[in-house]
Image (cartoon, rainbow, N blue to C red; front, top):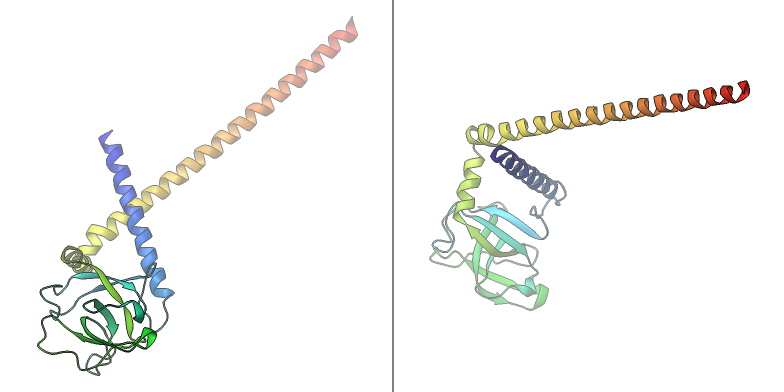
Length: 210
């Protein structure tokens, strides 16, 4: 019983991992050239600097919800494509310290919590990705760990492959059993039909002899 429960648990987790991987793959494939990969309006990033310490730590995983420029408030932490030539349009995540303009024409001044001064370049609606709605140090460490092939291959890739092959073999066996049962059922029906025909023929001959 315990083995059966464990098997179903591992199987369910593997399916969830595969589905998540497919969603991530589709989000990347279907995202425009200048867009951030997103799933249901949410993008996932890993922080690579300590500019937002202590609110957000380096290597934290953050979830960014897509929002228009008119929805951003003062004090929000936003992710955006930086106009700083030194960052080469890389995604940056800083806090909004000032807002100018109205609606979609709004321009944001940003600053890293750990930085002494505001960012030199402002953020417009075209550069805005969205607002940070969640961050996790645990998920960040887990992501960094799993990105290491030495860890990913033996702990994730190999077990998933074994589970997929096991399920495939079981599916083939079930299909064969189903085909065999259908063949046996068809054979039994054919034999039964032959028996009925012989019984009818025998009854007809007996009636003629009388």
